[in-house]
Image (tube, rainbow, N blue to C red; front, top):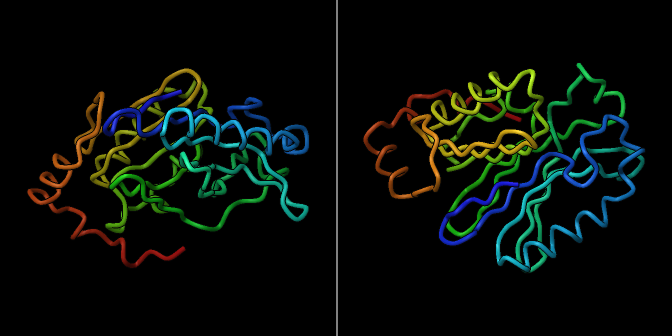
Length: 208
């Protein structure tokens, strides 16, 4: 679990499928989705914070690896994992999401992403519509070097903060690719004004 300090504790991020552990057999773990969402709501209310985590859910006969962004009042946004991990067979049990989701929270615009999404930079390209990416993941130790490199790359190329949380190694990285202990909106704005690389990108040509 990672506690992100925007002011006090404003954002709590849990690993992918925090309630059950990562499982490519959706039917085996989707039964606890309601209970897991109730837990996220309780945690958000307790800490007066937004809470992020993913669970396997069943909806209209399909299964999704769904990220919830839950607020203290119990309201939430959801994002269904777009890139399914075919190497482990995730695509046989789950349905890929189609929507790109950016939420707003206490002055921050946050792009929601799940684990394997990290390897696909086009989908997460900053269109000038977010300040932070949150990755909830179950990234294995055998590929932890790739995790570190890709988190830094997403932060640098998108001029944003990146939060990456998994059970063994969590990171908070700033827009220069540095590990930091907190986020600072003014520093981000100042750097974007000084180095406006987003204005030269091809983000407006991308459609999802």
